[in-house]
Length: 140
Image (tube, rainbow, N blue to C red; front, side):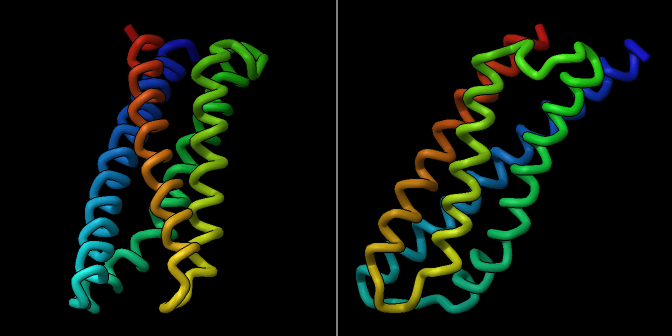
C-alpha cells in the first residue's frame, strides 16, 4: 500500500503540473482575446476554444485538489498533514470555482465581469506556481 501511495503522489503532482500548463495556455488564449477586443478585432474560433476549454480546466483543477486530499486522508488519516499545501490548494480550488462562476455570467458588453475574470485568472496562475513549488518540496 505504501508503494501505491508513493505512485499516487507522483501521479497527483504530474497531473496538477499538467493542469497548471493547461491553465497557462488558457490564460494566453484569454489574453489574446482581450487584446483583440481592445483593438476591435474578434477571432470567433479562439473565443470558442477558450469557452470550450474552460469547464474542462475547472474540472481538472478541482479533480487535482480532491485527489490530493484523498491521498493524504488515506495515507495519514488526517487532512492537515501539510498545512501550507492544503491552504494554497484550497485557495486555488476556490479561485477556480469563482473564475468559472463569473465566466458563466459574462455577456458581450459587460466589461466588469471580464475584469474580475481576468484578475481571478491571474490569481489562479500565481496560486498554481506556489502550489507546485510547495508540492515539489513535499516530494523531494
